[in-house]
Amino acid sequence: MLKEKAMPFEIPTRHNEKLRTLVERINQDAELTQLWRCANINAIDRLGLSDHGEVHIRIVANAALKLLRLLIEADIQPSVVTNYDLTHEDAEVVVTMGSCLHDIGIAIHRDEHELFSVALGYPKARELLEGIYQEPELTIMAAESLHAVIAHQWDMPCLTLEAGVVKVADALDMTAGRSRIPFEAGKVNIHSVSALAVESVTIERGEERPVKIEITMTNSAGIFQVDELLKRKLQNSSIYPYVEVVARIKGKTEQRILGVYKL
Image (cartoon, rainbow, N blue to C red):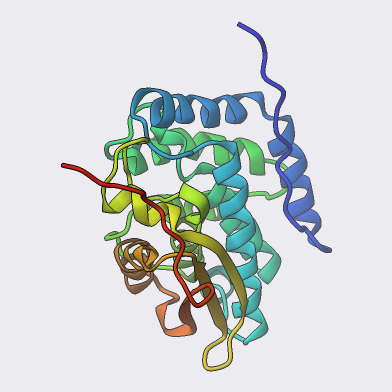
């Protein structure tokens, strides 16, 4: 079996030295990289679902950081600051760690993978954060990261701002067929058709709320993705009051996704 070349894990660390060190360790961690790949074997090759591997992790981590930073700019405090007197930089570490670990449980099974992700993720979180933090902060950071992992399940209550950020960021990987709603590749139904209708997702400072998520669609079928995926995750997150969502259909006419559909 040929060894695959690792895809670099890249996020904007800015001046956060703890986050920069974490990113360096993630890029050197062969076990974590292989867990992402094993998760993708189960998701894509064995179940015929959408990508849940390295690309997904990178998309979620970048989206989570952008969401968190916009909330902080609006003077909304992360939970590690409020409850543990830690810093905004530590909150960035939590959402990055949570993003990197949230789907590794799919390496075991897609069903109830959040529980498997927690089981695999606690020792991995401590390993990656060792030396960056000392006790008791090391245990706090690992626990906060794992809360974000378990709470990315759509109906699991988010007890922290950071968990809500990761939950919503996970749902935003929905462009060009990358839906988080499980659908079988090649099968024609509302899940697969709607997934192909989403052209782009952008995150920016909001006008009415601190964050605006704008979704551009080539076909109104994409509304299913917004309603069934993003809406229910956002409404069950801790950041719901701070986010506005705008979905637009590109152009005056809709792109035809299907030619003929027969039962």
